Image 1 (spheres, rainbow, N blue to C red):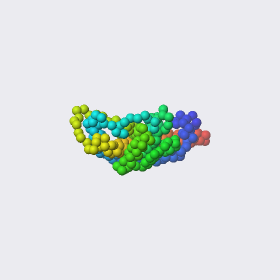
Image 2 (tube, one colour):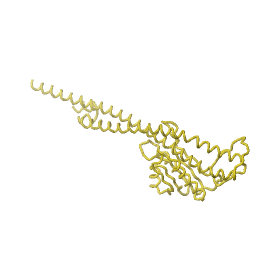
Image 3 (spheres, rainbow, N blue to C red):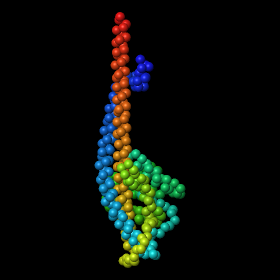
Image 4 (tube, rainbow, N blue to C red):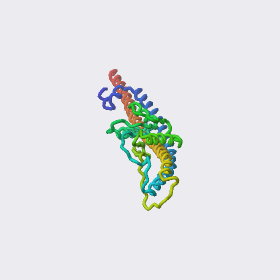
Length: 295
C-alpha cells in the first residue's frame, strides 16, 4: 500500500516506523521540560534584577545632578575629566552575559562594540564583564585590561568601583583618550536595547538659573572627588540593567522554545496516530484479502 502510506504522512508513515516517532516525541518532551524550567528560573531572576535596577537609579541620578550643579556654578570650570583631546586610543567597557540561550542578547551587544571601532587604526583596550564578552575578545586578540566573569547576578559596589578605577587610571595617565561603555538597557520583558554610552571625557549639562555656590577647596577638586563614585554608579547601573535584560531575553527565548516544543509534539503525535491508523488499515486489508483468497 505505498500510495496510501505516502498520502497519509510522508516517509515516516510509509516506513511504518512508529517507534521512531515515539522516540522523537519523548526527546522533544524532555527538551520542553528543560526550556520550561529555564523560563521559570529566568522569570524569578528577572523580578529581582528589576528591583535592583530601580534601587540603583536614584543614587546615580543624584550624583549626576550634583556634578551638573558644580559645572553650572562655575563658568571657567575645567578638569582632566572634562577636557576633550585627540582620540588615538580607546577603552571599551563591554557588558555581556555569562551564558547563552538568550536569543540575540550577547551577539547584539558584542557586534555593536566591534562596529564602534571599525574605522579606527587600532583596536581598543577592553574591560570585559561576563564570560561571553571575555571569550569573544580573547579569541580576537584584543588587549583585555580587566576581566570580570560571573559578577552580574550579585554585583557588589566594590566590584563596580574596581572597574571604574581601572578606567579612570588609564584615562588620567593618557593611555586612553576615550572611554565608552556598552550594555543592554532593559525596557520591558519583551524589549531590550543595546546601548553605547560615552563616559570619559564627561559631558555634563549646565543647569539654567543656578545660583552661585562656594566649593572647598575648589570646584575642580570636589568634582574630581565625585567622578570615581559617579563612574562606579554608572558601571553598577549598566551591569544591573544588562543582567535584567539578559534574563528578559532568556525568558522570551525559552518561552518561544517551549511553544515550539509543544507544536512539534502535537505534530509528531498526529503523525504517530496516522501511522498507527495506516498500520491497522493495512492489517485489516491483509486479513480481508486472505479471507477472500480462501473462498
